Image 1: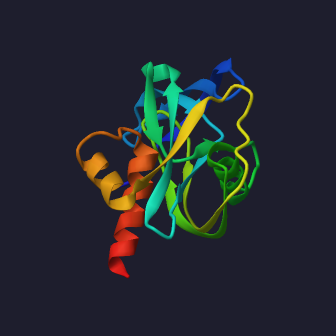
Image 2: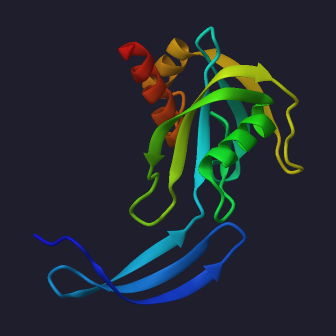
Length: 179
């Protein structure tokens, strides 16, 4: 069965600094017409920085849409056309003040595929050394290290609601358990 939907037309409703929003008229696989609302996002990167003592660097920062401080791994938005690994290295240094000698791809994550085309590139960073944190002017966060085992327990016990952090930390834990 063909599951593809065909775009008939697109109408942009909003052009923002980070996102664009549009409404598409489409044809369903059965030939009927429908609408799809789409948020265009340039994508992002997250980095699970693992110390030699099996601790992960986390940041706590206020997330306005949720009205609360969240615990996350360092992450950031891709500039349009930017290489994901370059972005990940920049964000790890800016947010956590950490430089890594070794990066391993943990794959990609589609956080909200029902209405947004954002892709998050996930990395494991190892062979770490501390450097100078360099936050953006509008960025306020604290850095902490949490043992990998504790981080997994926190995820399982619903203490880390951030999807990219859950996925990356659980992937790191699975990789480390396999070797």
